[in-house]
Amino acid sequence: MKKISTENAPAAIGPYSQAYITGDLLFTSGQVPLDPKTGAVVGTTIEEQAEQVMKNLGALLDAAGSSYEKTVKTTCFLADMGDFAAFNEVYARYFTEKPARSCVAVKTLPKNVLCEVELIAEV
Image (cartoon, rainbow, N blue to C red; front, side, top):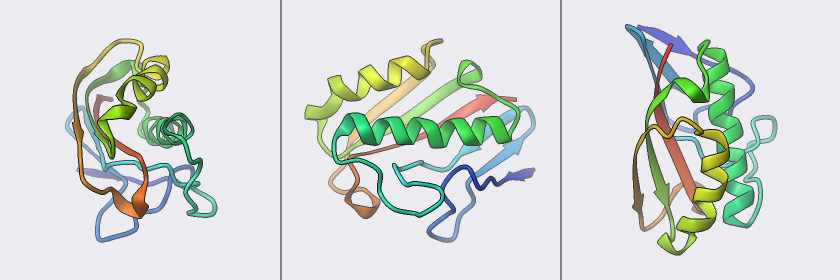
């Protein structure tokens, strides 16, 4: 296994790693809308927060030598399923190959953000 770490995505805020490669697959930890430089939550709307989440995932994909197009599975967590359509608009701009996906509503996310996404991608 190879640990992936980049300053272009938020540092882990607990006892976990940003991502790992095992075999030909990248597994990321869930990314929330934190600014990698300051650790502050970015945005107040689902669109703004989803955009930052996608940027953070992109930084991990890049650090691993992968891309959005090589993503095979995502798991999306929303604080409010009422945000589903707006979240999808942002998501669809990045995951153009339409990977397999699960999307669930959860009671609370870290730092009370509106969304979190993790992924598995080919490297």
